[in-house]
Length: 283
Image (tube, rainbow, N blue to C red):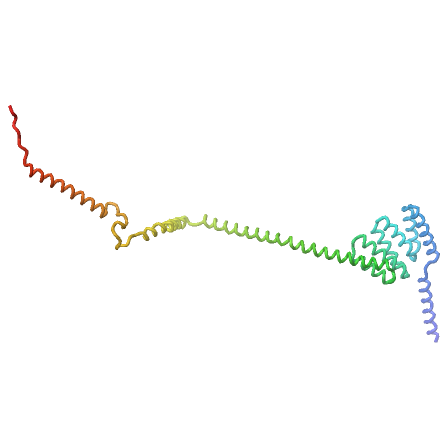
């Protein structure tokens, strides 16, 4: 029985200690709230430097005052120091114990993401804000706007990607053509090198083959023009050197015949007239 009483006493002491630790330091919290109010007055007087310093003091006084980092975040946001503002809004959300305070912190975090055009993170921040205050119309409107801008941004990125793919295709075709030209040049260089390294005897044989090949045309044409033996003589091919053609032989025979005829006529004429009479001188 005594043992049960001892265990219960330890348990009660531990619960009480935990409750004491969970309780905020009200004196420090009140001091932090007072400094936060003073910083707000300085900020309203356009004394940003003093207001920033006072806000920092308020933040350091008590971790249970989410208003100090939240208001400092708003001051940075007005100065367009969005990185500093986001850090303070996040700190305010972590310190907040009530849903309205969390809602305000996440709402302003979404605003920072919107300024940075990070619409995807803005959507998530606004959703978290609405989880803590579903009835806030301003947050709901900002969420719808962030979704619309995100979709527009994604569509634009897709169009840019498609355009890049279209621009890349001609480059690939040009590269393929360049590679093909290089291969052709290499093949041509190999053929030239083989031609240079070829045996002179082979080159001479190739030349003779080429000459014979070129000679095939006229020789073939001459064979095609060679007369048929049944054709007349005048259509026969020209005679070879040192050999008379039939026409030349015929002309020669005709000339000889004419010459013989002339000799015969001369002899016949002498027979008719008789020998010449030798005249003696008349002394």
